[in-house]
Image (cartoon, rainbow, N blue to C red; front, side, top):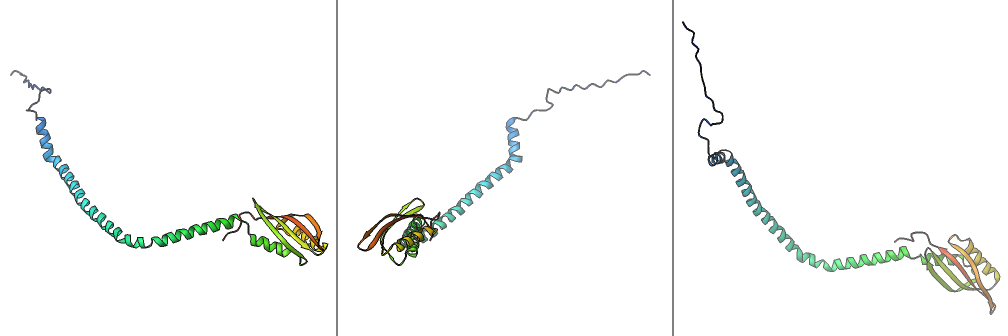
Length: 193
């Protein structure tokens, strides 16, 4: 027996397709039928949702517009009240600004009155505001020197007044006529309502 070798030969060409290749149009069509239909359904669903949402949003917009138009006559009837309230707020702001920026003149007059002796009669009073103080100029008359000295001493001892000085003095018709100048110190920030 002879030994014969059987040779099996397979010719394999990897560069050459074994079958006919599918055309690009066929591949796209097959993809559209398999996966593309889900994308198409999803897009259609989004379009339908947007379509119905548009109707709902239009309905809500019209409902709100009608509600606003129903409120317009009521709001217009409140216009005089609004104008009155704004005027009142402006007046209050003006009063508050005046009160905080201006000295408390009644308090200054009260302090002067508390320090004035009974024997002294004030003939004129001048108050002039400068920054954080008020310059007070008092013209008065007294029957004797004791009233003048007492008045100046009381003003000097008062914590609200500073620089109280006798600027002029004279004798006229049995009265001593004199002028006192002093500075009234304003507390920082003024006063509030």
